[in-house]
Amino acid sequence: MKSIETIRVLAASVIAVVVMVGIARFSYTPMIPEMMEALGLSQSVVGMLATVNYAGYLTGALLITRVSDLDLKVKLYQLGLVVAVVSTVLMGYTTEVWLWYVLRFVSGLSTSAGMLLGAGLLMSWLIKNNEKSELGVFFSGIGLGIVLTAVLAELIKEPYSWDQQWVIYGLVGLALTVPVWRWMPDYRACALPRTGGAIAGEDRGRFIVILQLAYFCAGVGYVVTATFLVAIAESMPELSGRGWLIWLIAGLAATPACWLWDVFSRRWGQWTALYLAYTLNAISILMLIVDTSMASVMLSAVIYGASFIGIVSMMLAMVGRVFPENPSRPMSRLTFSYGIAQMLAPAIVGYLADVEGNYTNGLWLTLLVMALGVGVLHMARRAKVRETSPAFPD
Image (cartoon, rainbow, N blue to C red; front, side):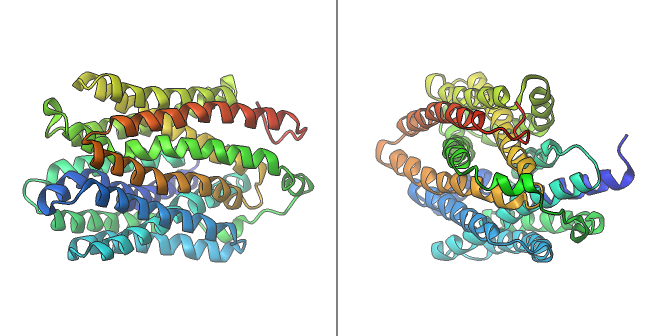
């Protein structure tokens, strides 16, 4: 049984993800129909707002690769909490598109702090305290963030205007930072010494590069659905007004999936688990193309939520175990590729939707990229086979 301290540390980490990813990032998804209706935003602007958010995420990932000082990591992590709340609240105080771009970019920086610094700091704490070096529980915060934003979206969309809704999201984030600050451990005491195996791991350049390409493909599969799922649902006559429910279903599926993927990975191997997660993500996209019934879209949301979270959790945990003395750095390298995908894909799909009046070709393009990702993932596994380090378990 886990100690009270361990439970508090895990809870603080999960809630921080809810704030810096759920509130700072995912509050935008259910807000898209609200802002489009109230302000007449085009699909291109909607896509660009998502793109600049991921540009901030990408920039944060790049900066984190340059940070090795543990004290600075902790300070940036704490700053990310503040920025997530402030940037969300301020979205409701302007209608200037260029200022929205700035705020979404800044919120992307906070998301990178929550995802990468948070995961790296927790991984170090788990290893230091002889706990299982798995991040499934940590990444359940992403699913919880989706659930929270979906429920809030439904509760506040009628009595409050779009600008008031942004402020409410920010205030909820502010309330959630209280337990995070109270239960956050002293991560500065979790520094681990560099080892010969870890240093040797720096030479695995080919493996990491191929894995980055595979993760890029996963980023495309993730971000297109994350950005447009609610809008796609709302564009269907039979699902009009139920977009929030589809988003809620995706979050409910993602929340326990992290832990289940950890269990599956332990039993069947991490590569088998990753192949399955990639394939399921592709299937969820295909379902949005071939069948637009409510049942099909709901099932697609379930498969999407369960699969994308598994890819993120297993990929980052894997490289974190390889470089335990500085897990945030390899995590950031992978996220660099993920961030590029998240920056490019929404703009491209949004443009195609504007030109063609639907999301069909954008979804086909996304499906093609995910199929490519399965092949690249297999190439990464073959590159790994050439390594003899036990740091890469099957």
